[in-house]
Amino acid sequence: AQSVTQPDIHITVSEGASLELRCNYSYGATPYLFWYVQSPGQGLQLLLKYFSGDTLVQGIKGFEAEFKRSQSSFNLRKPSVHWSDAAEYFCAVGPNSGGYQKVTFGIGTKLQVIP
Amino acid sequence: DTAVSQTPKYLVTQMGNDKSIKCEQNLGHDTMYWYKQDSKKFLKIMFSYNNKELIINETVPNRFSPKSPDKAHLNLHINSLELGDSAVYFCASSHRDSNQPQHFGDGTRLSIL
Image 1 (cartoon, rainbow over the protein chains, first blue to last red):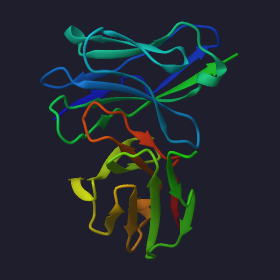
Image 2 (tube, chains in turn green, orange):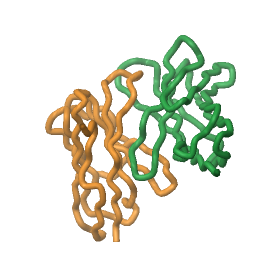
Image 3 (cartoon, helix red, strand yellow):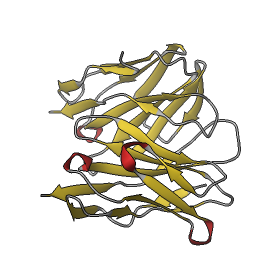
């Protein structure tokens, strides 16, 4: 079974600074990988996803993530954080085996943005 | 247009009661899910239906019973509510394939008194 680890529970960055949120996964092959964002009082929204091909994927809101097979990582980055980026971020891994989808979510990283 | 809508948004009730949460999606997806998010934001899948057929049934007390009248609806009924059931419950939907992202509703915050 797959698993995902988000080592940082809480991160604080200054507005305009760069951001990197870490995600490590465990899966026997190359999995499907996702990053979701959850704003307060709302459901999760997909930021980006990786299935195959180019290991650097672009998402919405200026986010990108890089798949590194050797490190079993899929870290999320943004070059310049905006105050509206303050939210909870979830990394998720899904099996690359076809059929029914059972996605496993990480515990989330809460991003705080200070002026 | 709301893609995945759940009702009610808030549910406050007493221990021992029975309650239902409804979910509807207008995205044309064939797979729907129920997740439970606890106070620490941990998101755990409970059930998944594909075309009205139960395909994922995690270790959930049998007080929780999902029902899918058609592929656009997935309701969750909870009997004999307990304090530990307090959480935010999210409905989601997607196309069946593993590489399809899930679309989430805004959640139902259930509080047990």
